Amino acid sequence: MRTDDPETGSDPDPARVPDWPELLNRYDRLVRSTCRRFALTEAESADVAQQCWLKLWEHRQNVRDARALAGWIRTTVRRDCMVVRTARWRETPEDVPVEVTLGGVEEPDPASTVVGADDRRRLRDGIRTLPQRERLLLEVLLDPREPSYSEVAQRTGMPVGSIGPVRARALRRLRVVLGEDEGPRVVSLVGR
Image (cartoon, rainbow, N blue to C red):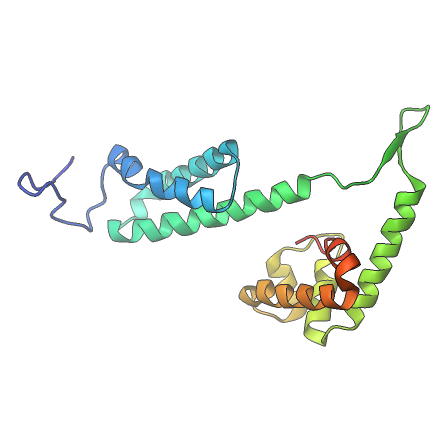
């Protein structure tokens, strides 16, 4: 189905959607290089690439202009990479020493429990010093039900696109308030 110009070797109609093998060859490097920017493992990158190609395959009949494919692919891969990184972060076990009891049930080390409670208290005290908008955002993000960004936006009255930048500013201020020794460790409790 290639309609390359035999003299120039280029496609005379750049808006033409290429056939599937040509599409894979043309955009595979874009997918892989975008994944590399997110420092994903080889397996994670392969999963993201597969998700991207599957989404494109499912929506191929909606593609009207091939010139828009690179932007769509880049955006799709970025979003999927962020989902993978977030999932990886949530799966990382906490540094809580665990002892196995005689019954085989794991119990947290009491000293770690006290330190964790103290860190959470410091975090809450630090959050109280922030401007109202940042304080509200961090309190919503600390909700144990882990609300989605759309839920956070609804509860704070903030556009979804503002959540990340406001969160970053709030965390910078919080690190300063908590000090260099404790700031990074305590601020890490704000998981997102």
